[in-house]
Length: 95
Ligand code: HEC
Image (cartoon, rainbow, N blue to C red; front, side):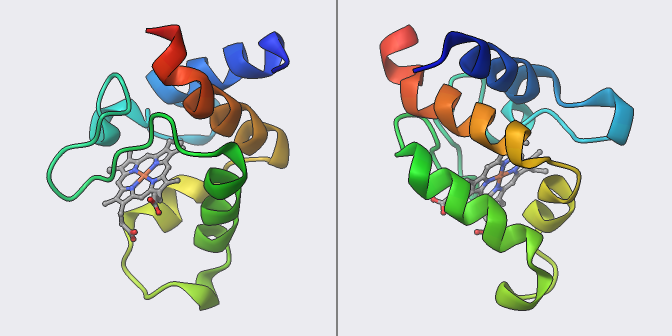
């Protein structure tokens, strides 16, 4: 994996993107992507799958109204999505 992509993804995961109010993914999905209660585990999921899900959240007509992930995914660029997906796929081996 491209290490700059993974680093960018790690920053988004841990801190969010202040410039467009994207919250840190870790707040809900756990510091290590382990998930908790209603928040699914993300660590180790395939990057392709994560990208696909984030794109679905961005397309408001394909998921029921009210998922918090719609708001979260709204501000992510394709590059942000690729980075966070690469980071999450690599996460189990980074720990
Ligand atoms: C405010 C809490 C919250 C934050 C912050 C948050 N998520 Fe989520 N996320 C959820 C919830 C709740 C679900 C499951 C709900 C659903 O499927 O509609 C979810 C689902 C997902 C899924 C789908 C997982 C699957 O197995 O289908 C992905 C991928 C995801 N989140 C990625 C992210 C990323 C990347 C970020 C940071 C940019 C993030 N989330 C920030 C609450 C959050």
